[in-house]
Image (tube, rainbow, N blue to C red; front, side, top):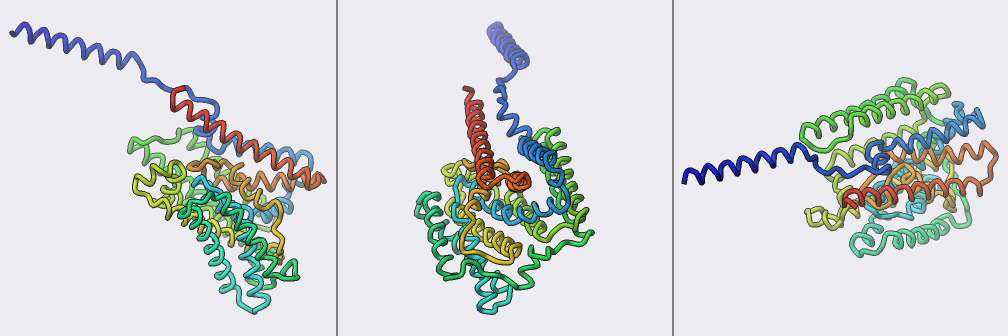
Length: 419
């Protein structure tokens, strides 16, 4: 009996030793990373940033006035409303949906504000509030049709784009434009342009970027301590340094001219707020979850319908803000929606790295995307290129961004499945 026990014990000991040895000697299978995975997972926004740097360098070489203070300020002023529009569309894209009505919604809200202030003598505050409520209401309609009635967002928002385009013509009547003269509205981004003082112009962006870097560092060590997956230390350092460098270079260029315009404060303040919502709240995490897998999110107890409605409401309300800023810059609002505006809004988000398939992307992508779009337009204009050339170039950049995103996602899916 004892011999049998000892034999079994020896066999068990031998088996354990063999298992331990095999565990040490044979490493677990690690899927080989594709180039696409390295670019998207390890380098993050760096490929997009490199693209922007190459575009800026190209136009600066061909025309040295490109980065001069006056022209650079002009680029930023033109980018402000585009960036605000795109920050709203990012939320919709993260859900894997699309909103083709934001340009029409924003223009409609601006027209209503202009009519109230110029024709009916309203003060700026109530008129802006009504414009924001109209934007939120338009988003609510989109959300109801998409989330509750389950009609594809492409069809719903395209239909409402047509409806609002006709409503614009009805509201303005025989007028093609409506001028705006309210001092408060014009102070947002109008002529003469309002600028922050030097202290605020330098201090506020610096504090914002330092808060962003501090959040990255905090999240890195918190997740590492909890044993969760984190970005590499190299990426953390590079991302932090690049963020600080970009902000400070922009501030220096602006301060060397006249300063940081108010419209930039509105844009970056909104992006910072949305970034906090998306990364620090359960609502933001639910947006990513629904965009990644709506059915799994529903089974996990997430109110998928509510999330979708809320996102469409936010997107349209933000579009109203963007249109108000643009109206302030142009001192007027027109009944005709700019033909390229809707494309530019979506392009700025997608080129910046937000996936059209949902669940992936950062609100900060708007910054890089809008700069790429606006630098292309401005640089080609300085080179005396016509609108047709500008549209062809921007379209090619957009199709490259979408194709890159699709190929990278496909490669990552194959890698995870081990194929």
